[in-house]
Length: 218
Image 1: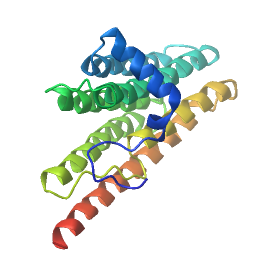
Image 2: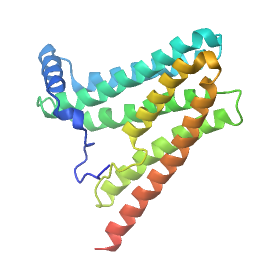
Image 3: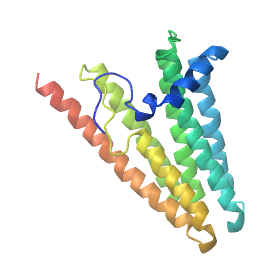
Image 4: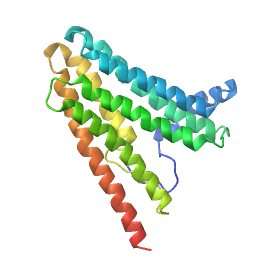
C-alpha cells in the first residue's frame, strides 16, 4: 500500500456511501469517537475468546467459534473505521482522540493474534508464533509513530499493515471453519501465523528503512 504523509490510514471504504451514512447516524446519536474506539476492544476480546475456547470443542463444533472470531475481527475493523470518520468527517474530535484512536488498536491486535497461537497449540511452537505475531504487530505501529516523531512522517506501508493482518486472519479463520471436517483447521491457522510473522517483520524493516532514507536525504 502507498504510504501516507498524513497520520491517517488510507482506506478506500472511508469513501463509501454506507460508511458516511453510518458515521453520520452515530454522530447524531451522541456516541463519541472515543466510545467507538473502546467498543472495538470488546469485539477484539470476543474474537480472542472464541479462539482460546476453540481447543475445548470438538472439530465438528469449532467451525462456529472460528466464524465468530472472524466476525469479531470485522466488527473491530468497522469500529476502527467509524471512530475516525465520526471524529473527522462529522467534526467530533476530542483532545484525547489520538490516544483512544491508537492505544486500543495495539491491545486489540495482541488479543487476536496471541489467541490465534493458542488455537493451533498442538502444532510446533504455535503459542510462541502467536506471541511473536502480537509483538511484531505492536512494533509496526511503534516504527510508524517513530517516523512521525523523527519528522519523517508516518508510513502505513505493508506488506502486513493492520488491515492486511486482519484480512489474512479473517480469511484463514473462514477457511478453517469451512475445512474443519477434513481436519485442516489447525494447519490453515498455523500457516497464517507463519505468514503473519514473516510479513510483519518485513513491514517493520521496510518502514524503518524508509525513515532512515528520509532522514539521510535531508
